Image 1 (tube, helix red, strand yellow):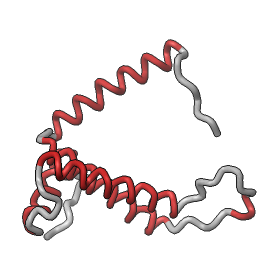
Image 2 (tube, one colour; image 1 turned 30 degrees about the vertical axis):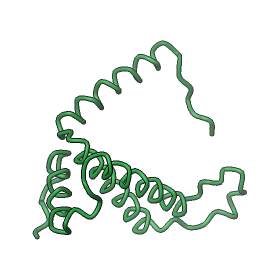
Image 3 (cartoon, helix red, strand yellow; image 1 turned 90 degrees about the horizontal axis):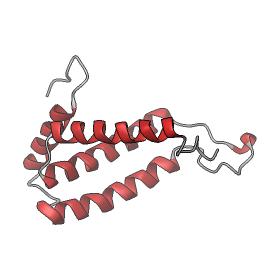
Length: 122
């Protein structure tokens, strides 16, 4: 398989992941079963992302570990793969997710404009 020359869009990522799963025999199953299995795997992968960063804000900076960006990138790709599996299992398209993201973005922007959101807790 040749690496694309340009970044893939959401629909291309979803198709590549769907094809990969088909080649593996769809190990996560389909439908609601696949969504549940992938959600559990995604939760675990997100905790592995946390293992790669300095997430303990209460620790002194001198105790911080050096972040291995390659390992972090690998864990984030695992998150993306399981998220993509869930989207595929739910039967949504790249356009469905793009539209839903934009709709949520509009809501979040409105919250900012109205002052009904915080700037974070750090």
